[in-house]
Image 1 (cartoon, rainbow, N blue to C red):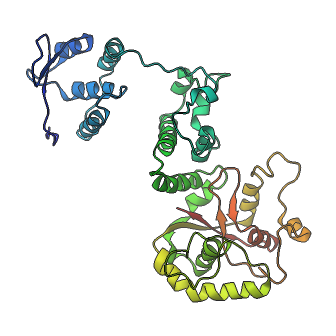
Image 2 (image 1 turned 30 degrees about the vertical axis):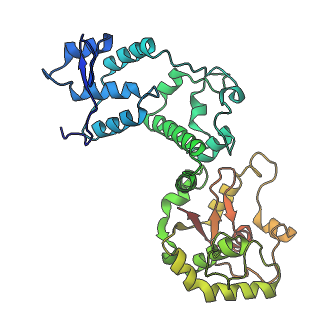
Image 3 (image 1 turned 135 degrees about the vertical axis):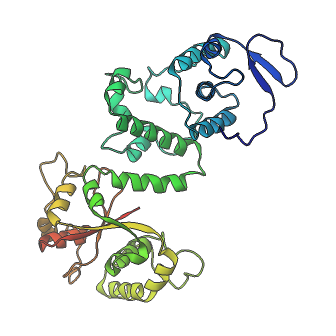
Length: 363
């Protein structure tokens, strides 16, 4: 096996002996199992060494070093020996003390104040969830809010086990590394849109492309949303001549000026944001109505989303003469309780005219 590119600071031996500078001897039940089953006459077999390293990860003792070693051995095909692992965990409880973790508590007591949480832990789980609810809820012991049930864990699929672990990793990383979330947030947004309970089928049928590859109508809609309705784009140095942001124009005169500026500045937006990735698809308007009717604001209510009624009642704040021929896409939301992030007026008019609806989302 290729050598790990790190010089060991000492030599470890399994068996009785007297420790000296740079030499340590270890002997306990788990290591006796290694002596009885090891194949090599001199060195510990790879799978045994890997299992020993994995068992160390439960304790904050040289954790970084052990983690690097584990990943290195994994890359060379190492696998866990479950018998050895169980023996070692019992040994470590005697040597290092038992791991004290009480899951049979209320969340407010379990989640200690030692972590400075910017977002409530359970709310963050809901935002990151692959499905309609966090996976950990599917394995909770009946009547408990934190304590899990191993029998329920054993019954879920391997894929769902992986999703459960991944959700926990995302939440933990987000809470503990405030400087890390930028990349994580992008991953969360992509993941939550792709696994949205009502629009994931749109995403699967669509195509991922860069901003410069999108149809011009989609480019203009995103420029409007990111730099007219909001101020996420066109705020850096060199954009002083872009005068819009954080407010939708509500008169036809101003609207015409905005559209003119979007056309004038479009190439600059493409130059700066051209490599930003989005998804794009065109779907039947009936599918979007069905998805919207699953939103929290409509789901379980006696009323349902009726776009033509919405427009007649003026609930969409439609400007007279606008959207007569809808062309811009709607923008999908990354939140599971809503379908659209932007484009309600457009959706209403697409539906009124029974036209297929272009859709974009963030990748």
